[in-house]
Structures are given as structure tokens and as C-alpha cells.
Length: 175
Image (cartoon, rainbow, N blue to C red; front, side):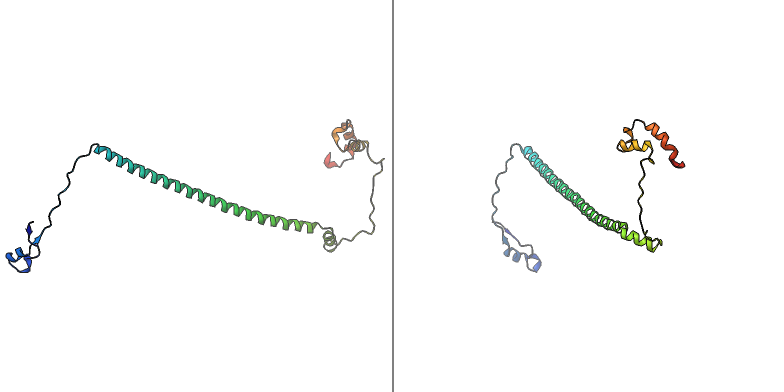
């Protein structure tokens, strides 16, 4: 054991002798184990570097996957909002359609039409309604063949002749 003076004793105003008396004993040193060089030291550095690269790559991959999941969720949520808006709009349009359909039905009602004709237009209902039916002599042969063919002009073989007979009877606008 060696004696060593305490560094703070000199500044207290004492002499060197007093400082020697107050010397602190150092503990005995423990012998250090012998160090030796391991074989393949460069390999262990490469392995640790490879482990760090793998760790960084795996953390990056996990972050990338999480970002992709979040982005997919955002796109899915936006699509859901658009779908809800479209459904709301479709419901509103369906209600509008029903209101307009009811309005058309009310406007087409015969009682309403009769009321408007009498009130606004000053019309009066007829006392007697007479139906007029044409006699068979009044109907031209072309019209008879048209009626016989079932209303289909392609079934009539004498279409050109029938047109020639009917044409003079038509109004000047259709000639």
C-alpha cells in the first residue's frame, strides 16, 4: 500500500507534515485479466454491421407496410363518404321525383281540367255529346286495305296505288 496525500489538505493552512499524516490509503489494485485477440475479428464486425442493416431494413419495411395500411384506410373512408353522399342525394332525388309525379297527377286530373276550363277560359260543358262514326262508303280503298293488313303498311301489296288515291285528300302541308 502506498500513501498518497489528499489533494485538499494542502490548502487548509497546515504544513507538509500534517498533510502527510492525513494521507489516504489507496486500495490494492486488482490484477486485470490477460487480453487476447480473437480469431476472425473482422468477421464479427461484418456480422454486427449486417445485423444493423437487417434491423434497419426490417424497421423500414414495417413502417412502409403501416403507411400503406393507413393510406388504404384513408382511401376506403373517402369512398365510404362519397357513397353516403350519393345515397343521400339519391334519396332526395327519389323524394323530388315522387313530389313531381304527384303534382303531374293532380294537374292531369279531369276535375281540375274542367275547373280551369270553366273558371279561367269561360267554357261551358256541352248539353249533348254526339259521336260520329264514318260510313264504309266514306272510307277510301287504301284505308280499307290498311285496316285489313292490321295497320302495317308493309303487308299491303298495292301501297303505291293506295298512296296515289289518298294523297289528293291530304292537306296541302303534307303533299
